[in-house]
Length: 262
Image (cartoon, rainbow, N blue to C red; front, side):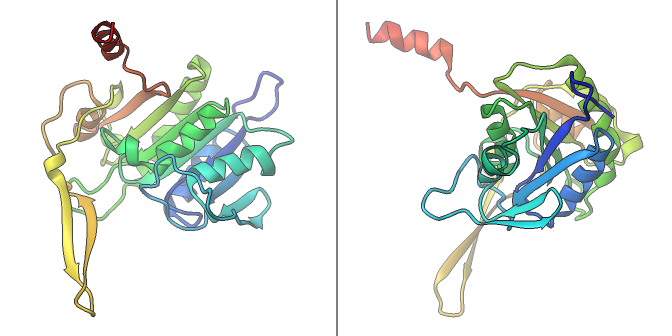
């Protein structure tokens, strides 16, 4: 068990974007139990994949208690973490936010769409160390998700990360490759990669009233990413650990614009 500086069990908040009944959340619970016995779950009532860092402003938030320390929120992952910190756990905030385990990798451009990443973003903004966890699958065209990979390797990696620490304006993006636990090549600290946008697929269909509708998705085809990136690591059987900075300012471009504008 990991303990805080006050020699108390680590208080961990779990959330996700796949919904309160998602299999990945059950895997995350198993991971968290290896770290602490003080575990809280506040997750979306329904799937919120692709919600990014959105929050609900035009509708009231409904919170449903499902059991001791377990709540479902009719909202986004951002809403969930916000409600946990400001309402459900306001008397004693969590020491750590774990978001996931997502069904599918969150690498490259995925981080800008991902509700899983957003859960960790909101925790970071609230001053709580936060980690997003995702399990890659489907590169071999199989629907099987190798949850055991994340379940086996995540606890040890999280313990090491907590011991080392990281800046308050940084969240950790942790991705597990689509391999069995014993086939993992190792752990690599990576940078955010770039997805081949030609893999974006728009599926056009026609409904019963002859009106068009569309499904968006990415083809699960391996591209040729740059060495050292998260996407390269996952393709090659490595666990990817990517520190993501909350400050999106691009300093070099700012300097160039400053000169141009006098």
